[in-house]
Length: 242
Image 1 (spheres, rainbow, N blue to C red):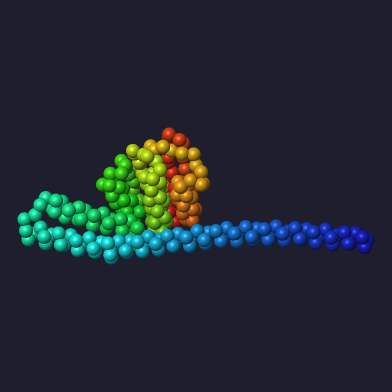
Image 2 (cartoon, helix red, strand yellow; image 1 turned 90 degrees about the vertical axis):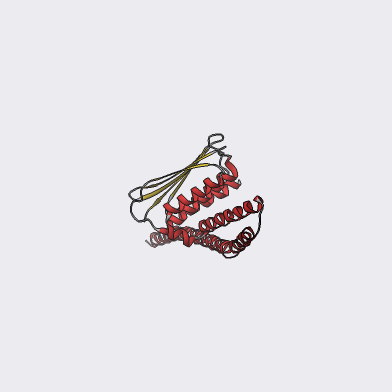
């Protein structure tokens, strides 16, 4: 009887110890995932602060200097007989001011949150068209429901990262962007007819793809990628509206 009791105690403590180990492993996994999430959120916050700082620098310093240069050119043009080159320079400075203002808006998270995803996406596609880097087309559905503005901000950042990857790596002549509002989700697609690739986490494009995937994960979304050498690349981001 004593032996049976001792065996029972041993079995009880072994089972309890293994149960405690399992709980500890689960808690460690949860803590690790929570730490990774907090780290990713902190990194994104730092990136947005950097974007805001650059946007303010463009607006407050570079923009003002160009505006002063434009004013001086206008005074010179109005006060004397001028060459066509001086007039052309005045027009180029005017265009540079507009382009920089638009760029500052695309970097400013507060402006994006205030403007909304549909309008800011349309404006950015128009800006890219005017730059003439590649042929880009946009298709948007009507907005259904009220999406979280912070989610829309992250969707826009994913779009910017996708376009950046295309410009740097794809050698594409055509890009198609679609934004679809479904009853409970927002779906962004960005497709190009460029070189395509086999995914590698070590490549420069892999860094951009990880950034897009990480941003999507943080707002409970799904990030999908399709690509193959010679067949272009397509990314799809699906995010719950609320």
